[in-house]
Image 1 (cartoon, one colour):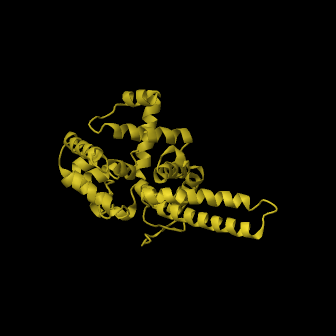
Image 2: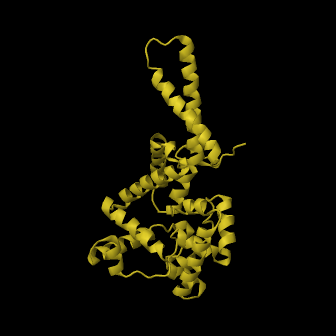
Length: 283
């Protein structure tokens, strides 16, 4: 029996669907949409209209189930970003992305709906963040590209020239992008998460950082990362830089980087790699 997991954007969050259940719903949705179109046809008899209405109703119910079982991704993406903005606006953007995904999804391509929807949710949430921060679309794209580059090799400290070459921009622009990223990441710190000792240093307190994630994600990452779970989580969600994590643990940046890379390799080599990377936003 499905159990509600809170609300997002006015929708009740239901547990994620299995791949099999998702596949069962998609043809029901397609038949419902076709039935809705046919209801506008003139000359239908009463029996046919009742049949089409039943198909429409079943399709609407299937759509609602698919949306509610996927909208947990919206809450996760908004909380994962953690920006100190109006969360209602970000959630609304995420729901808009989810609805867009539902109407554009083509099951014939072989993808899971949740995977496809996650890309749309991310796109619309990033767009809402960009608008609230005041970045142009191109600057936001550059910041996201920089973040992806920095995650690509935790053992390497990228220079401005390397960033410029990778992003195909000038070194001057690369410095601007780095500065924009720093300002943006700094806005992930929520004041209610600071303790007195860390507030001045800009370090996020680790308490309750995992509250919105499914239990299996936490349990699996704890198993894979062991004592470095907290550090990996903080870095993956950009609540702390490598330097801050290393300083907190009293080790060098190089040593901390090796630990984080070891965790990342363990995640990528695990049996749940695809699902974990999806939840971590690395797909």
